[in-house]
Length: 142
Length: 142
DNA sequence: ACAACGTGGTTATCACACGAGCAACGGAAT
DNA sequence: ATTCCGTTGCTCGTGTGATAACCACGTTGT
Image (cartoon, rainbow over all chains, first blue to last red; front, side):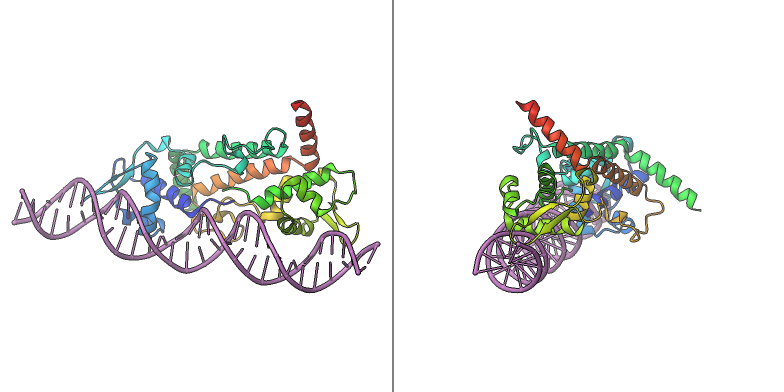
């Protein structure tokens, strides 16, 4: 019952990319240096983000990574699902593969509610908002 | 990001115990038969519930298990925490062991909010309520 | 053209921890 | 002695976190 490191790093990465000037291409090693991830692991983490259309990549000299969408169109849920797939709190919540206790089990409904609440929170915040808040937080520290 | 089978079975077990006449002692094998769990695994699952003061056990002839509290004093969160320990969505949410990005990281706040929402849902429902609902659901099926 | 170089992409592999489950033995109550 | 539960240790499979080798592509200099 805990998110993976991959998801954590993926979020950091996207936030970092959003903090760069728009359309600026960022080197992998720059992401690694600033976000405390190893290049090999980051490579693995970035692929799902690219496949999900959140990040674009560019090969060759001068290549690197950049956001594929506006930061205010990327939610935390998008990143989470890119890395971990559909969010589900219990196996009985997978669509189609309903357990046979489904029709009467009252706990099922509770998992559903808890899961929806989580999804709601993760959808509420987009990356633009998070960047704005982080800036605010850093200002208030000094 | 999914609850363990142990937690699932533990909840089933407590709900089942709550459905029995008050203070009735239930045999392990009867729990197994009705809840689709093997005795060996159930043994493992019951221990945390006993240590958490949710279930009582009685050895010897005529022994078995029964609830240690009123069903309306047992929440889903109690059972969850008995089996899985403190609920946490990310490592950075463990008290005391704060990550160094804590003071400015805006994602941290989001995890906190999501986690609180989940805890809120799991606290809202006690076992008595779930038993009542299940009865209702079964009635409506026919 | 084309070769060299600098990037990311793909795939295989590894150690380790954890989840899920099993079984044997020990201990208490009757 | 019997019938229960309690404790412990084990297996086995899967997923996480991480590394590395090699491949494919773009750019740039000649």
